[in-house]
Length: 258
Image (cartoon, rainbow, N blue to C red):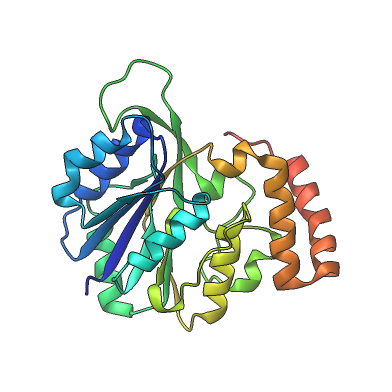
């Protein structure tokens, strides 16, 4: 059993996928498995996967019912003690990221590990290779309204997602299936895991580079409604309504750099 299962979900992402794969295969560690789930891409995605398939532990390409259905497929195929999603376009922060995480796991044996994430965007200028076609924006805790507590509890999610999904590593045994029809299923997933966790550790190093502009950004209005429904499920209707006034005030004051 590997310590960590790293799972990548992809669909028609040939522009981004190789960067993700290379960041994982560049890790100075071997105690992990790499699983890749593709939704029957029609671009050059499969050619990229096949180029690296001798270093990918498991991969499939088959129809799914959307992102979170595909993530459930990856979760069900994982055999590691911990699961970590790094989707197409995202990267592990540097080649020492996984070794550093494994050292923490061996030392503290927590149920959840989390950290900050470096937000990046596509570079519109000349391309210089797979690791230079993105431009850093800044740490998530600095460029969004979401401050990052160093002692995380599930109640901290009352005002929204405190931890970037790609900077959240959880024991597989307490990781539930994702809601397959909710664009804020990652928020629900983190809350459910934190409610089940006995020990949650903050990592003093950045885990990932997160490429901005995902599915929830593309469907912003529905994402907001889905987030509201998730928060009502965990915190109740009245507290969620009251918290949303604070969320709206905070958002109106905050000037995003993204």
